[in-house]
Image 1 (cartoon, rainbow, N blue to C red):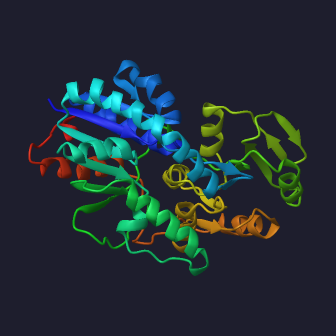
Image 2: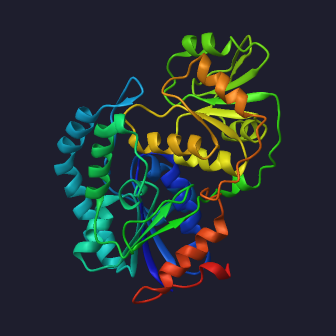
Amino acid sequence: MAKIIYAVAGEGFGHSSRSHLIGQRFIDAGHDVMFVGSKNSLLYLKQYFGPRVKEIFGLSFAYQNGRIDKSETLKRNLLNLPEGNKQNDELFRKSFEPFQPDLVISDFEPFSAWWAWRNGVPFISIDHEHVLTLCELEHPAKNWFSRITASMITECHYVGAVAYIIVNFFRAPLTVDWAVLAPPIIRPVVSELTPAEGEQILVYATSGRGQEQLCQTLRKFASQKFYIYGFGKDLEYDNCVFRKRSTEGFLADLAGARGVIASAGFSLISECMHLRKKMLLVPLANQYEQIINAQYVQKLGLGVLSEKLDEAAVARLLDQLDKPVPTDGRILWPDNERFFQILQNVLDKLEKPIGGLLGV
């Protein structure tokens, strides 16, 4: 049995759901796992793992009008950092040191990774973000400033991992020998869905703003139903059907959708791919990871990208819906068992190998 600290970034749903699935696999294999999270990941993981989960101070983003506010993000994190460091030092002293972990896994959580590096504990990085720094990508020239900012943040998050497992939906050349690409993994509640083609286009509005403008755009496609999440209300307005937050309802509508309109978050892209749903992706402004995701979704024939949700963008999506599923060899389709084979291969190469993931 190995003792493992699994540290999870607090922003975004994808880190939490991925770590839930992987962490449970370690537990099922007989290993002792301590989870570490902040903000969203703390709340999410406590639902499933209770006292195994410890709180860590985590970095956060500030948003304004649906965009990442870089200056406010920097200001907020710098102001909170002194108190956060005190909180983390106490966590390290009271929880990490007595636990004496054999391995630390970080899903883009920097403070646990730095603790492991300083204390000579091997650690592994499992995330999507390092695709920006450890893979050769085709970059849109006009987004150079967001690219530089995102790359610097990713590179500074942590160093010294014995391996970087980059979870990604397309093949790209790696720039270092200690990184490996792995396909997306899908949470069980999604893998159990049966995809069908219903009448609706599913719309997931991340910011929850601009309801009237959204309706004006979608009403121009009178024969097409749109099921809309993100505004926290049940309301039907012509061909626009607004739905309150509901995990079960959202997944049922996703499974039966003709197509999906959303921002370009990695987790939803992976779930759309698993269910073979074409996408119209509108990346969050200044979010370079999403810009790259959307660019490759369009390049690989998985959907279309647009800087704004307008009539032309919706028309392009509708035009894509009857086209066959792409067979581009660069696509890494979601594959849980393949992911765990790759992870086990990395664990087998540790100075003290950790086994059991493939025997569950």
